[in-house]
Image 1 (cartoon, helix red, strand yellow):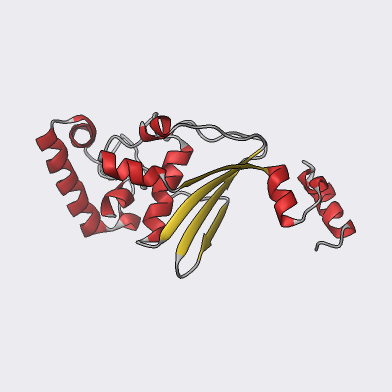
Image 2: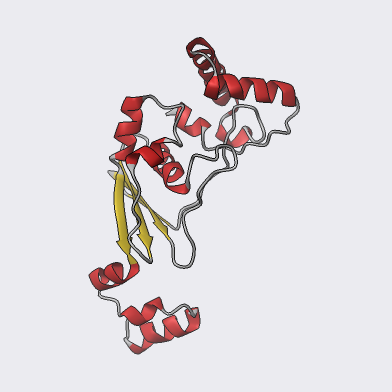
Length: 191
């Protein structure tokens, strides 16, 4: 789990010691098997020592804290919902251009779940098609078994009209103008 937390923190190549920063990160991501193992041990030790919140701009910190459009948590599970109305999933993160927003959200959900069941659902204007292989490109630091397992927590993509229908909401709430959408909800006595 700590390795997942490692990938959640902000990366900035300018650090107190940029040479170390680049060298350590290369070992962690692209080094020999021994270098990757050593890099993981060192990164995890630093993460344990400083914690996620105190790792900003450190060599072992790769991404910033993520926020989802909807985060639901119970005693038994975590559900992260990414909703896209007029935009698309971010195709890359700052630190790794092959890691798209969906791959990142799966890791974030797993980290927050802390052993509970978890899933990530995408709600889009159109059905979003993505392959496991495409998502796994964003996880070169995870072993194959972990990548396969993480992929099983992607619950798929729904469209906004399907979600509205399932929730008993009129399609008029999909109005791009928020004031008009709220008016439709009030007129239908849904709020």
